[in-house]
Length: 164
Ligand SMILES: CC(C)(COP(=O)(O)OP(=O)(O)OC[C@H]1O[C@@H](n2cnc3c(N)ncnc32)[C@H](O)[C@@H]1OP(=O)(O)O)[C@@H](O)C(=O)NCCC(=O)NCCS
Image (cartoon, rainbow, N blue to C red):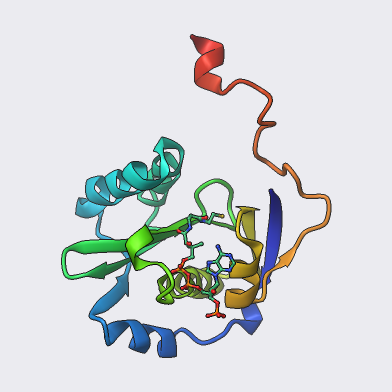
């Protein structure tokens, strides 16, 4: 998977998307520290322990480097930044039943606007899976020669197996 670069000084506005989601009573916000166990368990349950671990890092920062989309008490999606590396966006996940409703775009833009406000000029999407989602939603472009980037070679056994 390749990394992608996003210009944070030329982002689409967030407000229209937030208003669109609000029509379905979906609110985007940073989670509170007391919600850490809920958010990381949600991530782990749907996307695996690796993303849950990255999400935990978001809660080690203040403000929490993460946004959730929620309808009342139900989490629809989560996105994080500054977890794996400074300046990295990700991970992001939307629950299967909520996909295709602009929640992923909203969470991506909420994080990217936050990164711009925190002083970054560009963001890097580390190990981007669906390239078209990121290019359509935020104008991201692939970084040439960035595979596998900072992520370990998949042929190498994971750290836990090496230690076992
Ligand atoms: C990728 C993901 C976050 C998208 O969330 P979503 O809420 O369904 O996406 P949105 O509805 O906001 O889509 C925004 C735009 O991206 C497009 N898009 C969404 N998912 C896409 C995909 N997998 N491939 C290509 N384009 C995609 C949509 O068609 C839409 O385009 P348009 O409105 O300009 O026509 C979601 O599918 C997901 O959680 N996937 C599994 C986890 C994952 O792959 N995360 C990224 C890892 S780097």
